[in-house]
Length: 267
Image (cartoon, rainbow, N blue to C red; front, side):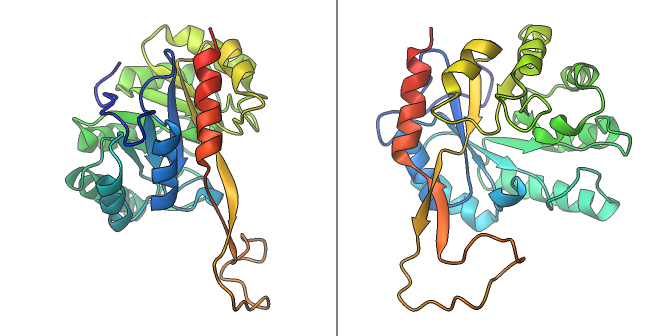
């Protein structure tokens, strides 16, 4: 197990490796973080705005989650949704967020950046890695937007990323399974290839068996109805196609436990 992956136990007694598989759950709220740990998550990826694929969480969220759970927390560093081509001012935001996340207890960091022609932005990522040390760093699903994933993997290895999160450059980890398997074989233990994207209890076993991966990434969420009694259906707080105001998605303890149990049973 790499630095930063030491499992410190779970308040629910379910934490740790699942028969050799490490389950990371992405969360964007305190409730989801607590539920993920209760269900057996070994590590959390802490984000905001999961509907946009995850952006940098607030320091307030990080601090409160740190008070509530004991498993390692990897913090997303992504200043906005959309592509992974960043301006100079956005880079300054990322560097500042890295410094603050380290100061407030992050156990690891998650980021990625690309050049306009779809390659890993080595210059920027080198600077961000230097700012991140000694914390371990995951290159996130910006990887799924690269021009040449096999070449990009070698770039990440040479730069010192500990892991890469990928759906196999496809719409889901199941659809991208052949490439995930090829990447895992190419990595040869030099970097951890983590399947993520659309992983559910219906496809996890197939993905683990078919990829050769030792870790996996999921959200395991369910819809939760709002406690509001008065509701104004005429107003939305975001874009027209945004999530409904009176429903949220949170990590589901039962779903996390089910995924953990499936991983334990995969030989």
